[in-house]
Length: 112
Image 1 (cartoon, helix red, strand yellow):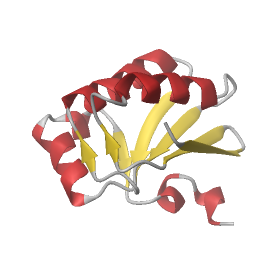
Image 2 (image 1 turned 180 degrees about the vertical axis):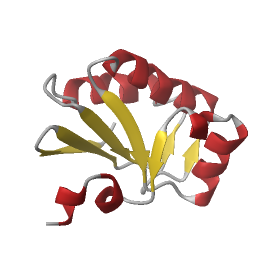
Image 3 (image 1 turned 90 degrees about the vertical axis):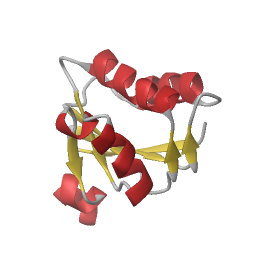
């Protein structure tokens, strides 16, 4: 699972560098995010701008990561394309997660 993490103070941005989060990658995704998220982070922002497809297993993995990080760290999402945003809307997960347009919107310090 190809992910990249950048820290901005107490925020960590984890970019998913895969086109899909599906059943084939869900467990590796969850394990990899857990490895990359520092214990000191107050927020982890998951950048989904490279992701074109999320199935139910992928959605479940994202929810599992949210539960794994809570309560000390919140999981927020950004950079969703139309197809991925539709999955979150249809499942009403867009009401569970804070969703931002871009990394810069989620973490103003990331503009630099």
